Structures are given as C-alpha cells and as structure tokens.
Length: 306
Image 1 (cartoon, one colour):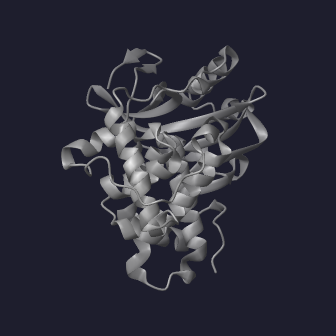
Image 2: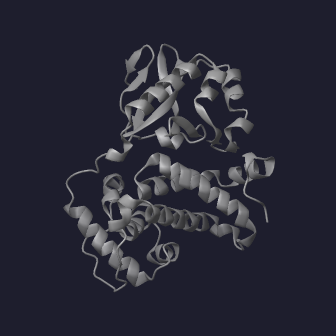
C-alpha cells in the first residue's frame, strides 16, 4: 500500500492525481459547501486525495471511484465540522424516521441558490441536500455516502428542503476571520518582501518549523521546499496582493495580462505568536477563484477590482 506523500510529491502520486482529475472540481465544490469555505474545502479535498491514494488497493471496482472519493470526502467534512466549535450546536441528533418530503427536489435554476444557502443547515441535512439535489445522486447512493438509510435520507431531505424554502438571507462572513493589527502588519510585510524577491527576509518572518502545502506538489516543512526558488524562476510577470475570499483575508497571486492584473490563485498564511507557521499555496485549484466572492484586491500601487 502506498504511503501518504510527504515533501515533494513523487511521480506515482502525480499519476494518481491525473487519474482523478475529472472529479476534483466536484469534490472541491462539495467540500466547500459542506464547510462553508472554499479554502477549507480545498484542504479537505487534498486530504481526501491523500487518503484515497493510500487506500487505492482496497477499491475493487474502478467504476465506483467517484462515489468512493465522495464517501471519503464526506467523512472528512463531518470530522472537520465536529472539530470546529462553531458547528457544535448544528451537530445534534438526527431522526432516521421516514418522512414525507415537504418541498420538491431542486430544479436546475434553483441549484445555485441551494449551494449559497446550504451552509445554514446542520451537517446531515446539508450533505443529503447537496448530494441529492445538487450532485444528482440517487436516494440509495446518498444513503451509502452518508452512512444512513434511504428513510434517513428522505427525512433529512424533508427537513433540509423545508428550512431552505424559508430562508431569505445568505450566510454572513464569520467574525473569526478578523485579523489582529499585528497580524495585518506581518502579512503586509510578507507581501512587500515577497514582491521584492527578498527570500531571506521572507524566511525571517516564519517559524523554524513552519509548514508548507502547495497543491499537487509539496507538503512538509517550508525549509525543505523549493518554494521561493520556483517563484524566482517564474518567467511571467506576477505580483502578490491582499484581499479576501468569502470574507476570509488571504494573499492573492496575480499575473499581468496586457494592462490588467488577473487573479490566479490564493495563498493562505497562518500566524501564531507573531510568526508565520503555515503557508498553503493553492496554485493547482482554479475552481477556488471561479465564482468566488472576491472583495477589493489591494496591490502596492493601490486597490483594484477584478
């Protein structure tokens, strides 16, 4: 059985990623809606792929690869929600009694609205509505993915659809995303040093055991990575700015196209005790930016809207 890739990913794992490439955007979409965060969703999708890679020999039927990946992703999302204090009240007990569906299944035109509002629902209802009404899984398939019964799924769908039908507002950004003034200054300094290619200066802002994850490329200690060298070698004209995705402050990589800067991908930087202790670079996840709620992007030359 293959091991979870650490450090630079080898050719075998990259080949595995290629075999699941068609499912990745949907996996991210599901994880993002389950967690309420495109960035958390990407992290959980990456963890899903890591886990699938280590267990691929247990999959007997290759035709069931996609449902199997969704099952792993669902379990990852539920574990994530259980660990997050803000979700504890939404994790109450659920009845598996068979209930009448109070609202009709979603039409094509309503699916986008469901995705925006589904974060209001408790995890089981959220998962069932997403899998059945957005991803078109059958009742039986949904029951298998969420480890329930068809009756339990019908009951969760009934409750979830009824709640969604009564909603009139969308989720608001979490106040937990607010940065302290010290963290804001640290990240601004990081941007300045990064844009000036002062890699020693950037490293001085990180802890000795800072970790790095670069999608499809690296997961390990920052000091063992070629991270900054890759940006140094990039022949395109790029810059780093600050902004937010769905209310969460992030750093953004932008590439110049003609006279405009275009957002390419986000970078998440974690600060602990005045030092950066984790960097997550999402350069292999274009779906994060697509249809994201992006606020003003601030560059060293001023603010821009893209």
